[in-house]
Length: 217
Image (cartoon, rainbow, N blue to C red):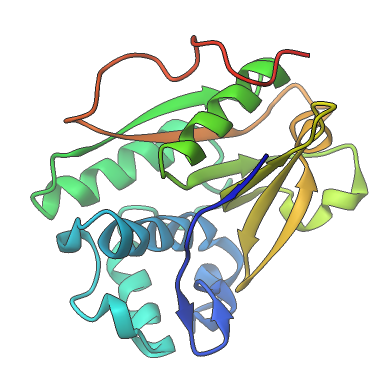
């Protein structure tokens, strides 16, 4: 069972890239703003919520994207400790949405201390419902994930095989790769990140985390 959400390209780049940002702090700490920008562009292109992204979201240049990132910057500004909590991202992005007059998008948070099964089930439901997932990883014991340490990125797809092995499509730096989600989730550290779960207010209310789904082992 495999599902991938659509995404946007800027020239040959798969989504945005914080390496494009002209200032040092945004290049090293702009991943939260970048993730919010990519989410906004997704909402405009694929959910019809056009007011949260640039008017030319269907035909962005790199400079358009950089300009947009600096509009987002005051809401998700780089800082010495980074945007190291889910609520900092959710509160900042919610303030951006409010300033754009957008009330349909809400967010729930699933902390990295939750079980793998809970996280996997929520992730699958989000993708099935058509929502990319802003994801935060802090420290990690596995150096295979060194590019995701203290980093925000999007997950926009999953691949679940018959044995319950779950891979996820992680999007960052204008590229994507498929990662073992159980290994990614098990950071081996007490302080963890987690998932931000989007929902639209006209959808049925209720927790995304408490229903049963395909991952139960």
